[in-house]
Length: 139
Image (cartoon, rainbow, N blue to C red):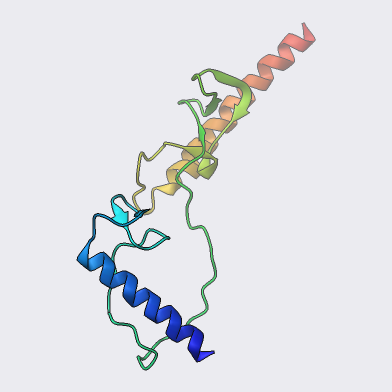
């Protein structure tokens, strides 16, 4: 109902006003650092005040993950490392399952490095590992 939207906008506008007047002393940790008066950590409010008589554009949004910047720690041979940087024998990682390849941010298009290069490296390393295991088994 309209009353719910009006109450939400009133609260939002009040939070925005508090944040503008006292940006460093809100009771909540703010997203990205600092403090906020908003319990979700929002500290930047734009296009205010919000009113139900404003024009709004509505769209359906579907949550997706475009790229994951984390994962298993691997070495140059795509072998997965444990918390003490020791190789976990027979476990290999590549693509988005492996983290740290790009540092803190990934340049657009560079995810091919994960997939193509480390996919091939992990396949080669796995083949070497299991060939050695088979030789041990035969001997």
